[in-house]
Image (cartoon, rainbow, N blue to C red; front, side, top):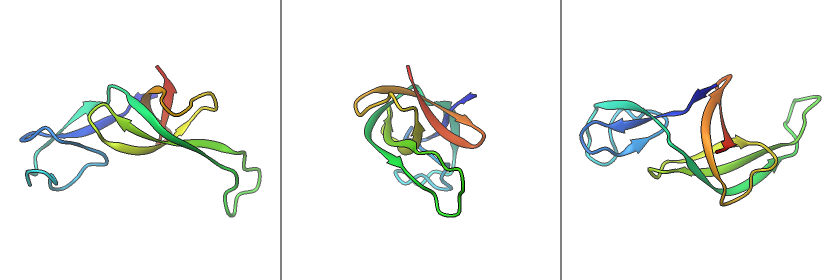
Length: 100
């Protein structure tokens, strides 16, 4: 498990994920990678089925906002609710949140 890294503009410090080619704020093309410190869960939902999948089990997802304002949709464990503080990490290419 790797802590999620976001991209920070080297000129204006605006953060983004995934990486942008050009900063939306200042138009710089220079970015550095930094660890995402934490995120707050804004909303949750459950994916109950997936087209074309046999053996699909319901999965919880959520909209989370990092401490720098980047909004992401991530996979969550069942006990996480709106308002919870989570740590973001990547596992097998997916972005997931776990309680801090």
